[in-house]
Length: 164
Image 1 (cartoon, rainbow, N blue to C red):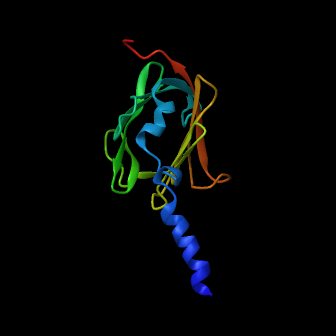
Image 2 (image 1 turned 120 degrees about the vertical axis):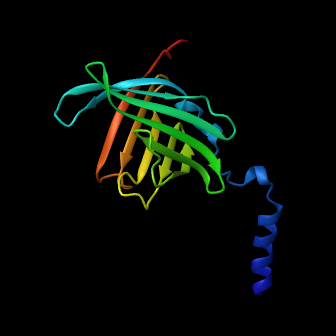
Image 3 (image 1 turned 60 degrees about the vertical axis):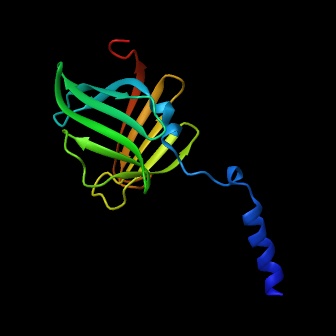
């Protein structure tokens, strides 16, 4: 009796073609992030500045990014980002101020122009989410791994890339 219930389920799993099974997220799924983006941020003293993000087009295994925070035309902070395919899956590694973060953020989900990167072991943020906002908008959110907890979010608009 047990065999008749277990065997068909096993047989179905084996017979389902790989293309029909859920695929792991890939670097190429992140094409919606590619390009040059600009938005506003609020500094600790309450002043408003410009945030610029640039992401390369994804290759099969690598996508690179830069972020600058500008106040009155001067960069007050910057971050480099590598998104690479590794044995862990697709991993976003931030380099705030040019120094590699101790933790990489694993791409856990991609759908409908949104990507979730998670590092539960990291202090803050634990999650980074990029989401399209229409054809020329992108939002970037960092949070404590929950939808209602500590978070910061930036709304960015597509801009021509320098030299383009």
